[in-house]
Amino acid sequence: MTTARRTRLRISTVTAALAAAGGLLLVTAAPASAEVKSTCGTYICVATAYQGRDYVQDVTVTTRDGLPGTLRAFVGDYRGSKVNVSRWRFVVNREVRAYPRLAVCGGLDRGSRVIENHCVMIP
Image (cartoon, rainbow, N blue to C red):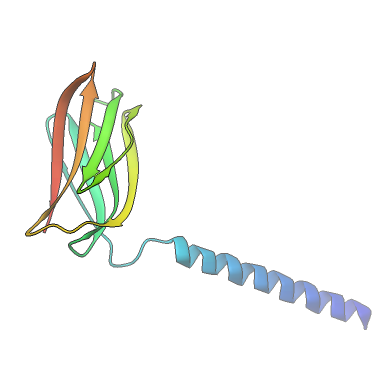
């Protein structure tokens, strides 16, 4: 009888842990309605995940030549911290009001010079 109780307790504990882990995945997963839009300039590519017209989830900036540079991201009043790599994902997670369209931008600096700023327009 004691063995049966222990087995049931273990099963219920494992089930509860799996349910909690599954719930955590649902909370951290990107919403199904998120859209991704990207475009490339001469030196960089900029991609953004967004919902609707005003909510920006993240901005990914990548150098086209694969060489590192100081990458930046900016949209509205958001200014991502600069990083010296060839690819970086800036997590924005904020609503930015813009009319009629929202510009989500990335930039590349090398040798203390602005090489390129490039923007993705969200309809």
